Length: 152
Image 1 (cartoon, rainbow, N blue to C red):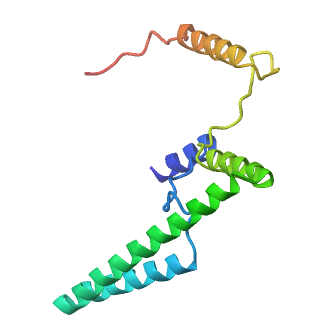
Image 2 (image 1 turned 180 degrees about the vertical axis):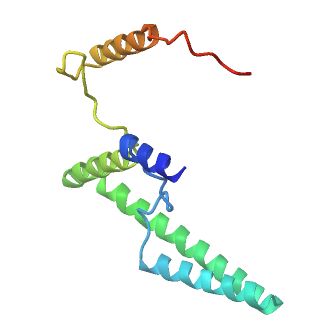
Image 3 (image 1 turned 135 degrees about the horizontal axis):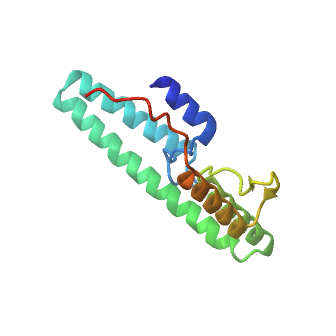
């Protein structure tokens, strides 16, 4: 089974998995510290299983939410102010283009070799080439040895 999976990966490739943090444009050191503290408190609560540890975790969780909210708001205001600046407008479009590109699957190249060995790039010609190949494959007659009998 492992060999089949490796062969499929070599031939077909792998798609990118989804990001763990879907929106990290607002992430900063203060947010990282608050989230790190929250994770530590959560681990302590799960290990000790006490009310005090749970209250510390809840306090840390509320703090992390507050820090994240303020970081998002601050970054949104910065982006809104940058829209008025003509130099920053190009930066915003570049960032949006990168975000779209980062979320695309790896699907391979948009070209194949046709039956004649010529590289085909046009989408319609690629579809026609695949159609011809599949018709040939499905309608091909194979030679059979009629002397073979099947045992039931």
